[in-house]
Every structure is written in structure tokens, then in C-alpha cells.
Image (cartoon, rainbow, N blue to C red):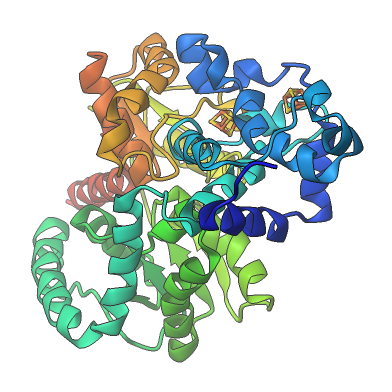
Length: 431
Ligand code: SF4
Ligand code: SF4
């Protein structure tokens, strides 16, 4: 028996705790058929066998076999089963945080339904429990908790910042009475990211629709989700949940952020094991609804040029939001070009799951983004819509790195522009 230390014991406990019946099935049924290999953008970029999904998941599967399968227990060498060691745990941590963005493209292309994301998430949880996680993700998760613990201090700065954005909003929309309500009873709680680009256009749209809304005191991002640290992820999400309950809102609307949408929509009800007293939607769904219902008027942005759309993995493949952004684009973009493949088979940009925040893996991230860069180049577009801040950041960097010459934008910014053009046209027509 190899020597075990505290980290190995702890990591094994985390593995055991994550072994639901479904997880055992995913561990057992992988036939190593390789049908998922070409789904992975890392593998597509470099054709290196260490990037095939099963190479990554086997770092855990072989440990699981040693403990839970007959062959693994009695003739481990026959199936390659191994004991977990500190070195294997180090390797597992690196692979889980560097070589997989949890994009899920391999999952939809596996005939056996093996959920590679869940296996890699368990590897991340094992790394986090033993202090082997990327420091920056840890710091960002702690910063979110500290914001709530020191709310009075942060609130003062935040309210000042919102006042400045409100002045800009009035100037840009030409509406001297435009406001950004905070901490008010309303129908909708809008949860932004920390950045004007996620507040100002959304405020213009919500106001134009005559929505009863209020801005969250907290940002939508939840870095503990990337660490697969559920207690901390719950704590971060709880800030918004409590705020929504306190204000009695009917809907929580998440800004253009993939992982925040996916966690509030799909993970939160499981974490808290109770239905939430509000609906969760993305601002993309709400903007589409406003346009369809005629609550906001938009016009074609004639000088936009050729534009394409990237389906963020968490909104599209993991969230099912495909048609809403396309319906919006068809109303405002005269030259909209699809990337191929798209929707369920969209290629990951390579920046998700905490990768863009981690400068240590910058080279690997840019290398893994090459298939996305090639896809964008083929469209001939000069602009890409990416309704996720991680994707937006990554595609911006890919544009620079691979000299694509494209601008990246969020959808709300475009919709706001299209609304202002419609308003201007109406004024001109009215004489
Ligand atoms: S995960 Fe699915 S597609 Fe990939 S090798 Fe295993 S069985 Fe085949
Ligand atoms: S989830 Fe995405 S990044 Fe991870 S192995 Fe599968 S295809 Fe590759």
C-alpha cells in the first residue's frame, strides 16, 4: 500500500461524497470509443492526446476503479487502476482547472451520455478541498462574500458609482428623468456584473419597457461555482436570493453572464433543495419578450456591418437559449451571419469556467481558443455578439492574438442602440 497523507485522504473523501449513482454510471460506462474527441476545442486546437476528454476524466476514473471495481481492486495493473497520490492529485488539479472549460460539447456528442463536466467538477472539488485550486478564483470568491459582510462600506461606493451611471443614462437616452432604482420593491430584480456595460444599457431597456425593476446590490458572478465549492457558492448566491425575497420580486433577471445564469437557473434550486419564490431568466429572454410584445421599439442599425453570434456554452448548450438572441438580431442587424457549427454544437471560446481570470494559464487559453478564432474568421464578420462577459473577454483577446480584427459586444448594448435609432426615426417622421 502506498503511503497516504492528509491531502490524499481528504481528496478521497470528496470523491466518495460526489459518487452519486449517476456519477458511478458515468465512471463505469465510458467505452473509450473516442467519439467525443473532436468535440473538445483543446484537442481540435492541438491534436494532442492529453486533451481528449477521456484522458482528462481517466485521472479520476482510474482512482475510482482501484477502489470500486472488481478488476481495479484485485488486478489493478490489468485495467490501469491506481491509488491516489499527492503527485496524481497535483496533476488532477492542473488538468481540471487548465485543460477543461466544462463546456459540455463532449457531453452532447457522447452516445452513452457520459457527463465529463461532472467528473471534472469532482476533480476541481478535490483540488479545492486540498488547497490546490488557482489562488485567484479563491480570492474572487472570498471578495464576493466580503462585499456582503462589509455591505455598508461597499454600498457607499456603489451608490456613488450608480449615480454617475444614471447621469450618463440621462445623457445617452435624452431622458432627464431616467433613473436606476436600487433596493426598491419591484417586479424584477436585475443582477448585473461589476461594470457599467452591464448596467447602463439594461437600465435604458428596462425603463423604456416601463418595467417595475430594481438593481441588485450584488454582482451576478459566482467564482465558487468554478471551484466547485458548493458551501461557498451557496453563500454567494444567497446574497441575491435574500435580496430578491426581501424585495418580494417575481423575477430575477441575470445580466449577460453565462455561469451566473446557469447557476441561478439550474444549480440554485438543487443547492437549497427548495423551489425559489421567483423565476430566473436571462436579460436576453426578457429583451426578446419586450421586442415581441412591442414593449420596446427597435430599428435596424444600418451601419453595423456583418455581424455574427457566439453561443456561450452556459446560455446555449447548458441553458437552451438559442432562438431568443437570433430573433433579436434579425430585428436590428441587417447583415447577420451564422457561425458553423452553432447552437448545441457551438465551439467553446476557451475562456469559460474561470480560465479568463487566471493569468497563469493565459497561453493555454489562447491556444485552446484557436478553433473559435478560425470559426469567426470564416464568417467574415466585423463584429461578434457574445452574451457572456467571460466569452466577450476571451474573444476580444482572440481577436488580438489571431488578428481577426473583430469587435465584440454584448446584446443589450446593441438593443439600446437600436432603440435610440427607432426613437430618432419616430421623431423625424413626426415632423
Ligand atoms: S465519454 Fe462517451 S464518447 Fe467519449 S470516449 Fe467515453 S463513451 Fe466514448
Ligand atoms: S467539457 Fe468541453 S473542454 Fe471539457 S473535455 Fe469536454 S469538450 Fe473538452
